Image (tube, rainbow, N blue to C red; front, side, top):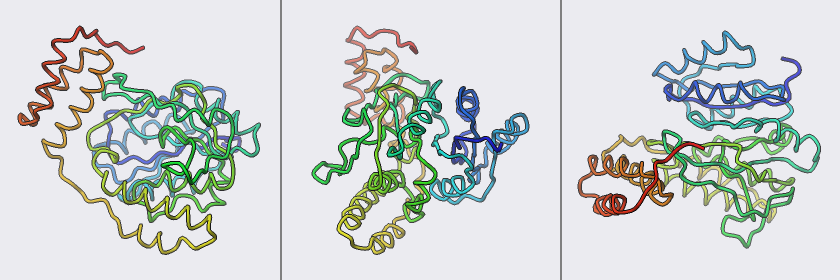
Length: 321
């Protein structure tokens, strides 16, 4: 393993049903010397055992078992174990498409000022039904400095998904890595700090496929995510003004995501969201999601409206491309 160039880091807490597909999407990458570091963050559904089985057959996979400490601390642990020149992220349930790691490594290797790189992300339903493709603003199609305090998110472009990014390990260490104070929104806090020191690039090609699943951080922890995102932006402004960010980190540490039980209304909202994305794409599979949303919450009036609309529209049978 001394020839490792790319260390792929992933945190896992359960999600065994989709784990094998994710692992194979990384171990099947060609043209790159990689190690795959997976931190099993207190899984209780057999994910840890599945990972150990893969590791027994492929020495590139390194599994670290720990008590549940949350995604951010799992990523900190995984990145601290990385031996590659570059670190790539991956989320469980998602897929890295063929060539992703090779393309990203190649760009970083020949462009010294480039500190982190992303690619277009295809967002999908649980069965990989196409919902949308996030391409960024298009301004990062070549290596560029992206900090722009006049923009809404204070950048002119940026990563399409946390799991889509590869960055230099030396740059990650120089900016002190993930801040443990950010239980969520830890990605943009890191992207801002990397962007202060060097360039970013978005590869104009879909190289990452992300599933939209119930119970996801973005879906279940939006209030905390919004608060911490604002704090990461305030911290950026402070740093650029030459002022310490410590007070904001202390505030961030006090914002802890609440453990919310899965409720029918939350699941209904997720099912409706997937259904509406499919309906907009002309995919008849939207009907099944609208039905599911109404079973969970019969009072979801817009679900009834969209279900009728879906049956009246000439929708096609959706297929994976």
